[in-house]
Image (spheres, rainbow, N blue to C red):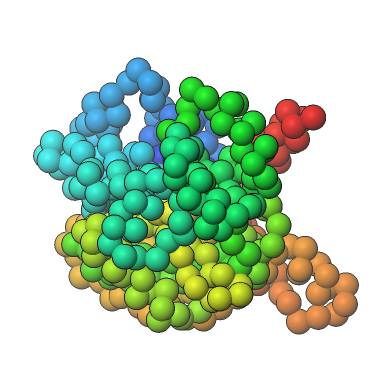
Length: 371
């Protein structure tokens, strides 16, 4: 029996996602190379990475760089883990697959609808799939109709951005007018939607030809403020309505591969709305495995290779923030360190330290620029 590790080329920008994917695939008979245009990608220092390569996103051909590495290092599988890299590999899949098998991906036209908030909102509205009402920042008639329908506050969202970045709460008409002036040359890249008090829901899926192969659902406590970032406090649970709505959307998009769908449950009406699709793995991909029991990277890898794999049903679980853990500790509560996401960070301590240090520096830099 051949026990030689198969060689995987991971491709992407984000440190956290890369380290999560690596941890999910460790001890599965693989060795890993990394290709990134982020020279600060903490995964470069992972104990699981044999070698890291870089490219310039503006000047280099990612396709040519992949082919060069695959040929030189005899790569067995091409595995983009980030959104734009997945898109690029899928576009060139027919050529790249001459050199090595590629990760399953959605055709460009449908993928571009899914990862663009405004295009997705239009698509969902046309198909009768629940999403919040919306208006483009460059369409005054749509804005007037939206304000008449839901009033203020509204949320201003960039059509292409993830993890709640650059979302602003708009409290009144004067604030909206100021924003329009500020973004005068870039209005088409923003949309407005109502601010909905409620729970963040994330439905993570792997699909093949629009059919969901496996999924997890994670939900936050009710959020009432202006913190639009992802949550450390999560409950993994089953929800037939969530999976029914997501199934309709993925079937209409004929989705292939992985997706992270952000949703909102209205705290008052309990209505569920689809907000956006991230066409990539997600920050909590490792907790999805460690806590909910679904190893998304391994399942997608084997599915892409046409190999047999058992599809597990996910199990209910909780994840708590470090703050909650220490509060419980002080009060002699029953929360454990393993209830946070950080115990798994000990699998790859140097890389995780660099990832967290980079996050703290970015946070500090953003605080300075806000003054």
